[in-house]
Image (cartoon, rainbow, N blue to C red; front, side, top):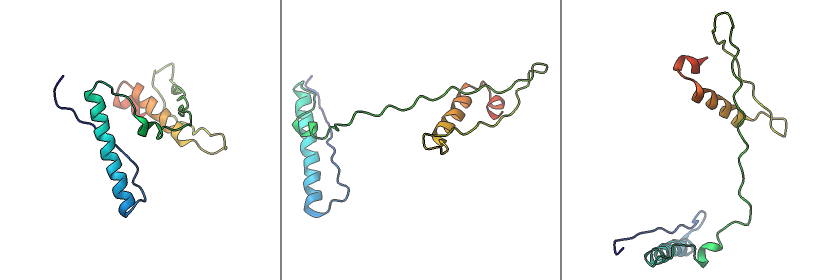
Length: 119
């Protein structure tokens, strides 16, 4: 208590010029000062200028990443054979490269060595 405090205010200035840009920058300064004042007072919550910035849209939930398919193992030698990871298709029947990359990353993260990750 009683120590220094600071905060920041952010506004979108994309596409603004001149006086409109200057007013937006001043709005950011005002937000920062209001934040720090509320914080010092122990009232660190959103104020009326920030509530209008909250979207009415529900947050998007990312799709779950499928578990990686284990590579085939030769039961006699125990050697893991290299295998291609197929590219899944999205709802529009087009390659879903994000899901494919997530599968690759999951396989790399579960590898116990560099040699295992390269297979």
